[in-house]
Length: 431
Ligand code: XLS
Ligand code: NI
Ligand code: NI
Image (tube, rainbow, N blue to C red; front, side):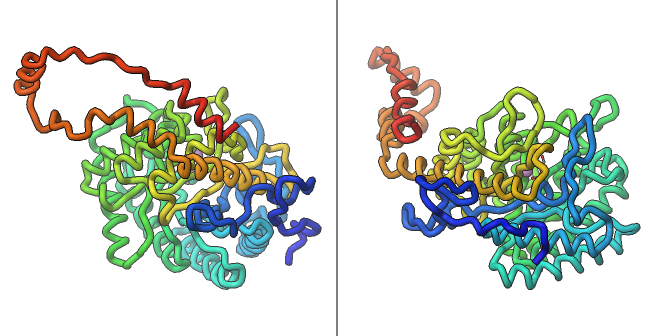
């Protein structure tokens, strides 16, 4: 055991009446809802980067956190892993997620970085066995190092493309070795800063080819997990190619990958794209590409990806409602891609942030389940479209529909959309 979390208890479900900040009030992992335990509905994952690698900086100031594992040796990396698995255990979090750069220091060469990734993921193995914590997804950090300042797959320099491809290979290998259930690609710098120096058509081709290579490699090594793309409209770039779910879908179609790749949808990215979280989830489900979620919350005023821990239960309930409608998370999960505020310096803050976030999701899930079980929204939705039952209008053509309208003297009567009634209905459960 390390010293870092000493004195902090293991989080347990204690119900709504207690006064223990370190207990769950809603997250009761064994509680069965719609035939499966809450744990399996929510599939919580801790994001290694925000919790253990982020130093607390913002655009105007540097590090505020002091962590004993900050440093660039493998000893530091091992201490970080020790603390990380202790936290997973305290929280009872079933999964974690990582980038290569979060878990091992960057060395002087590609070969050294790969060897270090191998070494630290070997160090994870027994810890995963011992704690039962599994890997939800692995990914490659193709955005922090200066070599990626003009993109990874979309870089004007083919050598950077090759370096990124080789790096993805090592991260897919590491993910497979650890039994990861998904592999994520977030196109950190796959976009542009100015159109004046950018060849859009060429960069799209490069991004498409890289993704095809990822899928080819997945099949070559027999990786059973799901390949996921994480849409984001901008930041750090002015414009990213994976703007939102609908954009990613057309990209997947263009490169013949719509049956191979799904999406990992992040709340904050949805907001940056001018959508709600539930819109993005519903859109992905309607296209058959819903995969997983990065659960956080964006500040609605700042215009940045602020990656705050979720705390708005009614909002999160609508997200889980769409997830349940889509048939659940499948191989995906609820990854807390969220970071502390930079003044939250203490070890306890890390634990309390996750306990709160897990409880928000659990409370939201209960609301979503109650709405699904009641069936009221779906009944009202079905009524709204009832006119289409038995209609063959979609099989006809413009001229045939013209004939029909003329023959019966059609004059459709507008009907209420009942929005307020539906909002009132949701608040019966969420209020
Ligand atoms: C950044 C992204 C990142 C991905 C993983 O905005 O959310 O954290 O989830 O690379
Ligand atoms: Ni994310
Ligand atoms: Ni993000």
